[in-house]
Length: 362
Image (cartoon, rainbow, N blue to C red):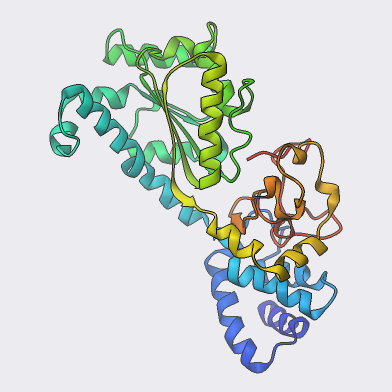
């Protein structure tokens, strides 16, 4: 009954003909059941269709409602929990293992194509054990990653904010298996980045800057745990824009140059998102005018201004993404999709800030 009522109300506010109802209704219901209903920041008892109706009702006229609906139907990219779980399950085989195979092959003077021979070599097992895996946020799902990759619990850390005592215990356990050893390879894992602006700054700020400082500064948490001479750092994301990956690479190089440190560092992701996603929106004048019209400038605070903000309705750093993650909406997506419920206009998938001061960072 509730779904039937929602269907009727949606058809009314959109002024759909019977033909349009027959075309749109199955698509909406299928996608809602498959993915959109699982958005974790909906208010209690709210499902996608109810949120869609409330969202569309705030627009002034039918043409604006049609434009908003088109934004959702044609451009929305919703990454479900199941999809993210799949990325977590394959990142070891797709990204981590090839790195370790290549590293072992180089050390043994073997061709990296001799996979079976390398995997059976004791050097590969040691390289795997001397790898430290660190989650950069809750979204990294590091516990699921550890279980899927069958890793030792003493080489996986759920957060980079960890005590020196815990790291010391991990090194001690490592040396019980490989005498006089330290961690040579550091894998830093996170779920998503859209701009990459806040991950690493030359002044030591950002998640990566803090970790690098902790590695190279005497007295730092990670300093006694890693082999500084042979250190490799690999930063891995499940989903990321190509712009963000490049921004992080530049940030890392800036940090290395300013701090006069040299170490191998790569930045990669499983599911890259290129500029074509953004260009499909910014090239649509009707969508651009719609997003500008239904924007609440009160979200533009000093943190928002850390990125580009001439067109703030495109999201933080003007990333202009139509992306929603099942657990929250990135502030880099177009604002009308994620505006919080206390604003003049509400988002279809209201965002909950991870920071009490509402700091904007990805």
